[in-house]
Image (cartoon, rainbow, N blue to C red; front, top):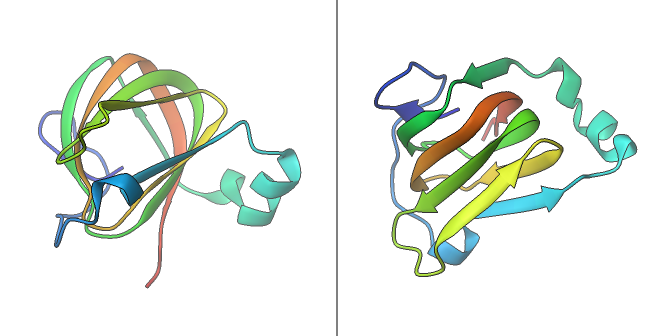
Length: 115
């Protein structure tokens, strides 16, 4: 995950924020072939208990949620919180700032864009 206040999580500090509309994308239940192509099962794992975590992304991050449920309020987004959970592939654009409200304990795989 990105940097946070509270429980430690892998990540880095934010830089210039992107347009809110492109900050977070959620792909619901991607096909097993897509997950295999991305190599999701070889990515590092992170887990977090219920709670609130302020996060910022200094690099693009892709997460595959294995277990749990999250509502993420994206800073500067008028559209409200982004909902995602078990089975979802979620991409956070570089520069995104948000607050995760972990509703149900989360286990996920994550990868940072190497660029």
